[in-house]
Amino acid sequence: MPLIFVRNDITRMKVDAIVNAANKSLLGGGGVDGAIHRAAGPRLLEECRRLGGCETGEAKLTRGYDLPASFVIHTVGPIWRGGFFGEKEKLASCYRNSLKIAEENGFESIAFPLISSGVYGYPKEKALRVAENTIREFLDKTEADMTVYLVIFDRATLDIGKKRFKEIEEFIGDRYAKAHGDSPSYSAKRRESLNRPEVSFSFDNSLIDGAYRDADDLGEADACTGIAPIAEAAEEARENAPSSAKQKASAIVGAGMGGAAPSISNIGKAIDELMDESFSEMLLRKIDERGMTDSECYKKANIDRKLFSKIRSDRLYKPSKPTVIAFAIALELDLNETNNMLMKAGFALSHSNKFDLIIEYFIKHGVYDVFEINEALFAFDQQLLGA
Ligand code: AR6
Figure 1 (cartoon, rainbow, N blue to C red):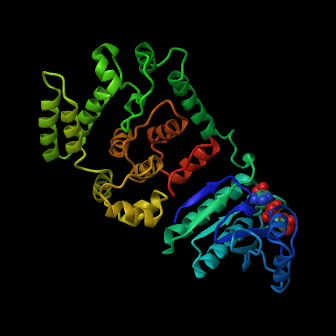
Figure 2 (cartoon, helix red, strand yellow; figure 1 turned 180 degrees about the vertical axis):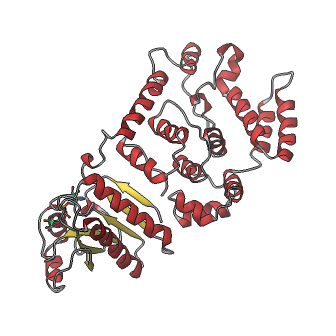
Figure 3 (cartoon, helix red, strand yellow; figure 1 turned 90 degrees about the vertical axis):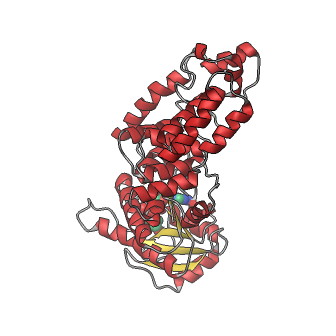
């Protein structure tokens, strides 16, 4: 039951229903209404004629005909008149009534345009706020498994000039430039000198800031195999593990790292042991510790119930990076804990990528609202959290 922003032409969306921002006659018009009628073909107009119009804030259902979507929900948004004539409430009721129709018909996916924000003149930022809040309210309450898409047609809708985005831009700017600076990173230099191709590890800790803090600390073999970062990761995991696991980890890491150089099989064993608590187990433990219910957590994470059930029932479930981060945000984990959770799934946050920096920005600022984060990710053309 997530809310997902997409940049698309709504007439191309293959969902159970798309919503049309129509007028009271329901007989077609310009903007998204015109585009939907053109793509659906003349049979849509025929059916609309039989509906007898529609009041502002209400919604009516038709088939989708030649559209990839099976149905069209037609709703009539308010015309903006300065905000003094109940526009906000009327706009919210467009979303509520459309979602109600979708729920009553058992639709699993629905896509909205930003109703009233074109010809009807509702300021786009404000229209977006109403859309988002109303959809979130609905998703919080509903038992239905429904994915709601909010289609943002033009880039100007998300005002990249707003204060929060400016701050994020600066935050990214400094760190991103450093990570991609003139002087090649240590690992790049090292590869160059060894004339070896880049090797991809599931533990790609070479991207973590400071993972290769001091080049002289590392033997050549270690630099090539990524052993040192793994040992660091193991150390960190040990710190954060429950005490029984800590003892075990301590013994293994001690055995693996002390004295003679550790063998690969020892390291492998150490990792297996430290992996005692999988991503799925860590997630469930954190949910309990936070005193949350499962549904509070996956809804806050903007994660679909089915996906959550899969994770719950498979202790070795391998989530995607945005899924892990969505849960870390829902659980309000700090940066350290977020990295621990990511590590369970073989990921890490890095300064080499904008997505990670945006996540870091929000965690550092204590903002744990997946939807607010998604707005920023969307504005910066990054993958969104949840699904
Ligand atoms: N896909 C997704 N979004 C779109 C598309 C598209 N193909 N085309 C436009 N939008 P508007 P309104 C966005 O004007 O303000 C019609 O004439 C657009 O960028 O379509 O509710 C009706 O018949 C904007 O953000 O609808 C009514 O008379 C949003 O859709 C009147 O316009 C809504 O813009 C309704 O005006």
